[in-house]
Image (tube, rainbow, N blue to C red; front, side, top):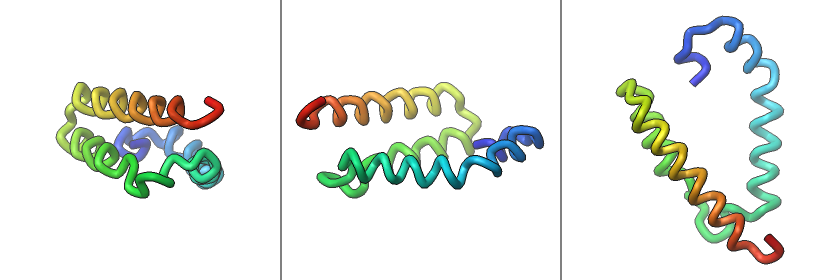
Length: 82
């Protein structure tokens, strides 16, 4: 997404912290067990997001993100202790 913006400042900034952020997100997914019931959780949404970006459809991208975040939040709320 950052590369698609063609903004050298953002590209440089993200290059510095994306590897750490990516690892911590993977750690969080593992810790919360988000993929324990569905190892492909989020895959369809990520593919739809890429399609929306390629098509330059900001509204579709926003809907995809909103829907995926809602599903993930519902999953988190369904976990014991949450």
